[in-house]
Amino acid sequence: MNINEEASCGTGSSFLVTFDFDYNFYYKIMIKAKVTTVGASVGIVLPKEILSQLHIGKGDTVTFIQTPNGVEITPYDPKFEEQMDKAKRVMSDYRNALRKLAE
Image (cartoon, rainbow, N blue to C red):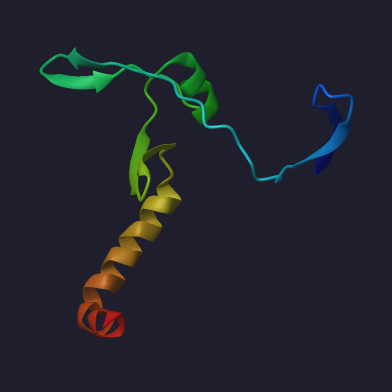
């Protein structure tokens, strides 16, 4: 999607500014949460906005996934866990072949 806006620079002349948006663009919003003591462990209290965005609530299970950009929190998905278990077995069974391919 393109948005064209006419703007002036204060000298009486004007120019056209074009904004090009990608449909996959999203805003990264920073929301802070504190790590707190929960019994003999530690925990993070998730703000309502995050619970709503993840479609989770009290008692639900979440998954932590390491990514190149940090850690992603997603609702627990048993199908994803099954896929990861299969991938681990394949990597274990074909460890040597995969190592050779990586060289």
